[in-house]
Image 1 (cartoon, rainbow, N blue to C red):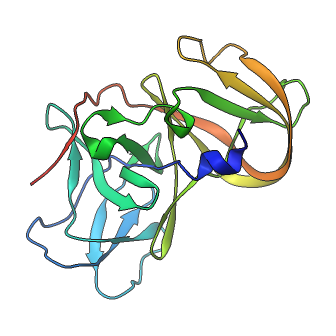
Image 2 (cartoon, rainbow, N blue to C red):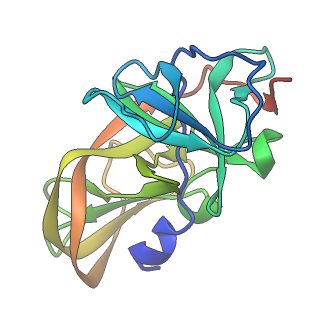
Length: 212
């Protein structure tokens, strides 16, 4: 499966602190999200946001995604890719994919198939592991998408480099991601790739739901 089709299904989330009022009522709300802490503030018009923030336009009043213990995962997002939550993991602002609108849990693996893939510039999956610059599109903004694999989130970090993909390494459910996976030759060509960062999401216990 080519990475472009996979990216079309990726979504992202963040579990940062929120600074929003539940009483806000509007069809479209512009917010500025701190890139490190995940804190959100509502702004008028289309900004401006600070250099340390990303502009995120919500389609309605800000809503939190909560786990079964009412632990805040992040702010709910919804676009053509699906349902997700914005949060910070390992100090990076990312979007976590939510399965079935947040009722079941995180969407597992690429394309929801449960597996994890790393991209390599070498022909035999040796050397550095990379992830493509998956994005979650929103009006006026793009956010980095995370992939969930066995209670950990995997996502690319900047700087993103235009590198040739020559092989793809696949990690199946039950396999150890720290060990080499199944390697397949690939000729996708040059792609924007970033080094792999991970974050623990095991503390979020499904089923998930939205705050009222």
